[in-house]
Image (cartoon, rainbow, N blue to C red):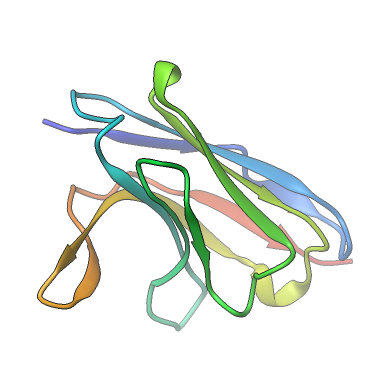
Length: 121
């Protein structure tokens, strides 16, 4: 069974940066699209970035130009570099395998524990 382990969260001041990591166990990492999601208090979980098997990326408008998703297939790891953070980025961040199902991108595996990012002064 696939397991996802996120790390790298923490507290940062507005304007700061963090780099999140997510290790995915199991096979087929290199042939899987991966995504980073976040869930802020009182809000639904949302997809903020996605990377395909060939490295093409997608970003939600709210993070475009500030966040960068990347992957290392040898390490079965996907990263999220977050720059110019603001308080609206405060959330628990999760990664997941994603697939295009029924016309939309969906998370496919059980969720990990996530990593908390807090942006405040």
